[in-house]
Image (cartoon, rainbow, N blue to C red; front, side):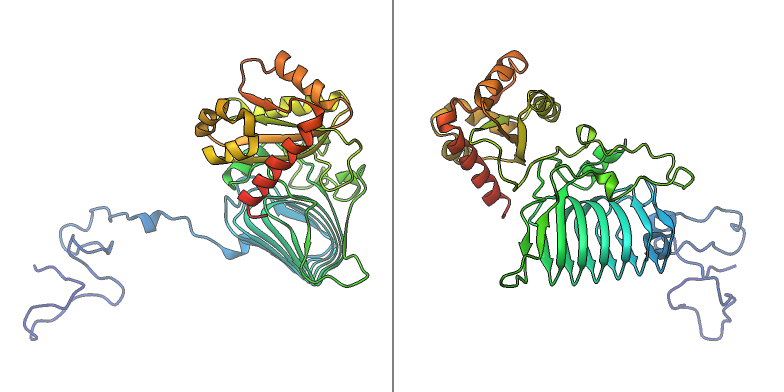
Length: 372
């Protein structure tokens, strides 16, 4: 008995095809997974990569037309996919996962948490929104009265929006640090207070910063204990936040600031967190942080007289820099460096007369490097 092929048969036109309307057999060199007819019908069909892909239901990646409910996604449910939220009213929405992009359209009176977003978060035509957001890019258009606790790697942009208030991201759940890494975001690159108003109005201010003592729970509550999210262990305490709490663009309490830089190593992130804990325990304030790569010429321009000792260390990876503020902060940081980080490669401002220049040199460079 002959074999049937998906390509045009070379047999004489008088021969009759015996194929069915829904099944076609192929040569082993083609890309179909049909089963040959004849004596080999018990042979398992070939499996290809596209056969093994999990079928995606678009409904799993959107929330639409909801009212008065607590909804969202648990860790592991999005895994870097795009997500859409639209036409929701008076909802508590929690996305405890990393994603590619998220758009939020036509929502009113909602409380929203969005885990790390690799690309953009875009709010359009929304009103009375309270949210906690971590993303690469943040933008609003035609929105009114939003309060946002934000971690944004680039400059946040508002357009045709009014009554916008911003604070620093403060949140923790066990998977959050991994979600930041999966989204390609650094917890130290947060420009939450550096807002660009694309459509300013003369004599009016479309945005402002939330009071420094603002607590996340006063705006975005934790999920109801009876909800599907009861298994997620959440904390909004600033000391536990994955993203360091910074003062941002608010007025500094002291004229003395100190630049403290960690060069790449096995425990760079942990060391930076340790320094923040030590400094804040002594009453000093964290103003801003950055994680950025440097070239030899950058080191010479930023660190000037100290550059020769530091050039070799930049080849090991990005540096993490922190600006700490308060009377006596320079001497305190030098003491911490000697007592706790002895053996770790760091740069610390040498004296308070030049420390402001150190801060300006580094963060101006970092902002240029990141296109801010």
